Image 1 (cartoon, rainbow, N blue to C red):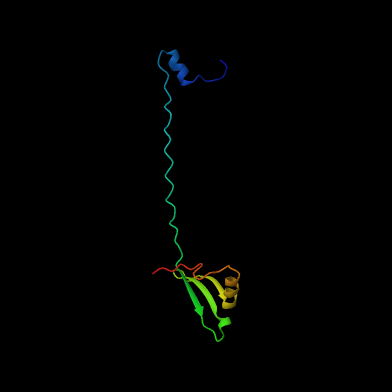
Image 2: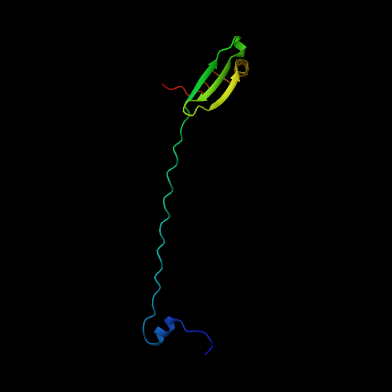
Length: 97
């Protein structure tokens, strides 16, 4: 003997029996990915804080659902943006009834 043990299949074949057949395991299908999270569009509100001088007014954009301040500009800055074509009335504000 060579020191190796015979396989059970070799013993079955030698005895005239059929070797046990290996049945492949069926792989389980991968679970479906969770549905993508719905994208929540921000509900923005423009607040204009009154000041004694018009150039000191502060324009603040706030997310109404979270209260988060999105941006804040002095009126002077908004005027510069409008003059440079970087801002037009209603840009960046989602006004829905």
